[in-house]
Image (cartoon, rainbow, N blue to C red):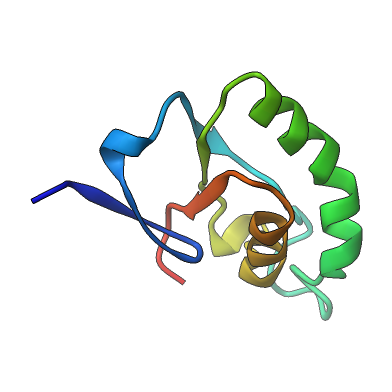
Length: 97
């Protein structure tokens, strides 16, 4: 049985992956969770900012990344899902929702 990791949109066979960026933060909000609009970001705006960097990583051979932001630094899973949809590589959100 092949070993797998869980990604934003499903599981991936570990043997199918090449280089991985193991500790990334695609979206952060360091204002703290007590701010009214904390961790809110328009997904299309987030993708517009991170997409060129994700494309560059993909062109360099990166096959996946681990987005390890926690709730305390503005975790935004919807933006992660949209970013995953916009690139050919897979994102893994390393912390429970």
